[in-house]
Amino acid sequence: MINVKLLQLLGDNKKYIIYAVALMVLGSFANIVITACICYSVGLVVHYNLSNLKTIDFFLPTLLAISGIFVRYKTSCFVGALRDVIGRKAKKDLREKVYNKIVKLGVRFTEEMNVAGLTQVSVEGIEQLDLYYSSYLPQFLYAMIAPIILFSITVWIDWRVAVVLLVCVPLIPLSIIAFSKYAKKIFAKYWDKYISMGDSFLDSVQGLKELKIFKADANQHIKMNKSSEEFRKVTMKVLVMQLFSTTIMDLIAYGGAGIGIAYTIIGIVNRGLSPFYALFLILVAVEFFLPLRAFGSAFHVAMNGLSAGEKIISLLEQQDPVWGQEEVDDTDLMISDLSFSYDDKRDVLKNVSMNFPVNSMTSIVGKSGCGKSTVVKLLCGALRSKNGNITIGSKLIENLSRENYYSHLAVVNYNTYIFNETIRQNFKLVDDNVTDEEIYIALKKVNLLKFVQENGGLDKKITEDGTNISVGQRQRLALAINLIADKDIYIFDEATSNIDIESEAIIMSNIKELAKRKTIIVISHRLGNVVSSDLIYYMEKGEVKEKGTHTELMNKNGGYAMLYNQQKQLEQGYLKEAV
Image (cartoon, rainbow, N blue to C red):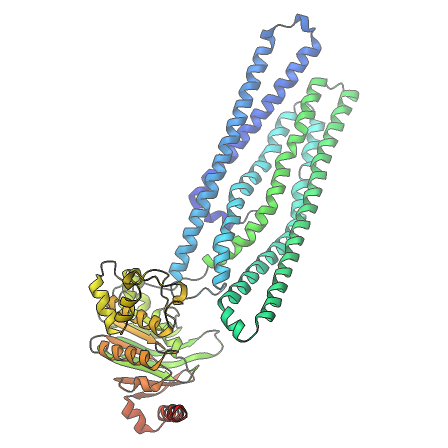
């Protein structure tokens, strides 16, 4: 009933749960005192003629009853405040843990969830865990303690009634256990459908333009309706299960209290039990079951939180990339005898060795699927190989401080993200002290200065995903921002794909100029862009088949030369058709 891993996530906040339970127990004692005072006052009235009673006779029970009411009221207020504290602190700490985990994972994408699932679990899931921590856990502990307290008091009045009440109490948790396995499956399915529906909705929104172009929006609409209908059905199953289990718990709670009351009445008739003690037993009989009944209600909330919590734990338990504490002192980057497999079945890279000299441009080329992008991920530390080494200045990158390594490295690709901020703010993300003059110089280098000046200047806001500028402008802007970063190593991964010839020429011109003073690594499907490279690695099926300059590789008349000539013929064919 308690997930130990979720409890451990609370850390020091567990003390607030203990405080809340202690106050709930104190409130229970106050309630017992109030009940005892009422029974005592009734006893005075019945045993003695009212004319013989004085106000002073009721002073002590009245004082105790008022004190009990005050304590009960205050404990209820404090428990509510503590539950609020538990919920707020739990949410704050969990969000911080999730955020820090995502930061630790860095450029590696989560294996268990995509963006929509990650967002839903880290937002809605944490909200559900708020109730698990603030309502379920305190009520669970209190529900275990309260019947024992009541039994230890009532057993001195009539042990038979006390035993009957105590024996009936476990029927509620037993019914909860009976439902828990089924409920866990239902809530797990609920979250799976919830995330699946979110994924489908996000895909539909992001690909709305393509859906319209391909006239597939009607089919997607049907798919979305089907997904939402499946979610509705599983939601109804959750509600039916909750209603049914609540009914069962009510029957047990009030039925158990009724049996206790019946035994109390039998005690009056057959065993000469005092009516005033009997009244006390009758009044506290329901108290045996109310804490567990409240716990049963919190159980359903907890199951929803548990399902979300398991996904959060799954995220938090993902293995962090291994990093050390050493610092970069030489930017000579090298790959030695490296092999890599995504599934431990088929090697994507086989015994790859590459050297990326300082102040030069090194290119990696090959057909799609040859392993170029995997090399980039390994160089960034997003993936780690089991065989072979990646070193920078003779130091293994896994022994380096990630922050220090990334301070020397920049990656620019075809979908480099531009934030939904002004152009100036996007530059300031790289260097908070960058001046407008430095920004203008960087924009001029990528031939964007005139466009920016004519369209709102540096205060022009880039919309989400850069939809208010062209693809070429977005990629040139990304290059300008990275120029401001002034890194030692630049990796350009298909940085000129899907853009016009003019933008491509501007980007490649800047890359070639940058190679005079930086280590440049270019990944490109278009071999025309790598002709001027100082060194070219040609890959096939995860292996380096050829290396050298463009001239040397063309003279070998191997795979590189064949691919280059094929592309050249295709480009010439397109030009003839255009003419």
